[in-house]
Amino acid sequence: MPPYLVDDAATREDLALYYDEIARMDLRVGRMLAELERRGLRDSTLVVFLSDNGMPFPRAKATAYDAGIRTPLIVSWPGVTPAGVRYAGLASMIDLAPTLLEAAGAETPASFHGSSFAAALTDQTAPGRGYVFAERNWHNCDEHIRAVRGMRYKLIRNAYTELPLCTPADASRSASWYSLTARRESGALTPGQARLFEAPRPVIEVYDLESDPHELVNLAGRPEVEQIARRLSRVLDAWIEETEDFPPSRRRRADNTDRITGVKFSQEIPPLEP
Image (cartoon, rainbow, N blue to C red):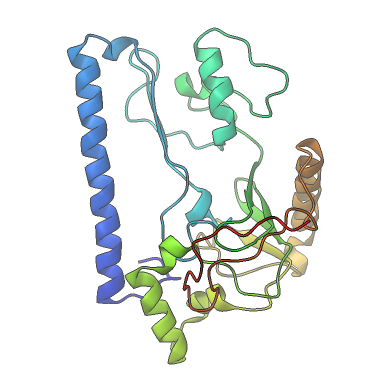
């Protein structure tokens, strides 16, 4: 059980349903592969399996923590990619289009920000990205979160810190959320669980993913990570400039879900503020 969730029967059942959903997805993917096999296309088809976010639970989906941004990326390419191997480097979904173009023998347009990881499909020792980047904008609540992740350390930058982190409405209508809010009301949350409800939040978060994979201990401000944080901040600034990211003062939008209770109080998406 992830330590930021309550270890009780309701949350375990919630998590079991998620695992069941994954099993059903596996079944459907298997049917698709069987159909390719039936048509004689399996050996000439490159198959990529991915998802759009991490697990749909509080402090996971719609966050910049690894539970929200670390997603499956499974490639099956008969005769090219060895079966059953795992790549240890970093890759980003923005790299997928350049990878497919290279695999097809086409050139990647200069305007693309991603880089091909085709070399890693045949050589698991090929170097990966030095850093991957993530952002969180409006999703039921307005956030402006930017993050940079290396192999070991991650830096998260929060622009709107006066309120707790927004849990999206689909995750706050779940048994795992109700267990968390019940524990909060009774004052029984662990420090790791309480991080979800803290306010104000820090502008800067720094995590050692090797010793703290669930990102519960914010190291920002500690002397031992000062140089690491400065380096990651410079890398993030360069990415923001390169991608022409918009500043926190622009594209503001009101919430339609309460950050404390998780109640979605409006079905309408509020307009962008001028």
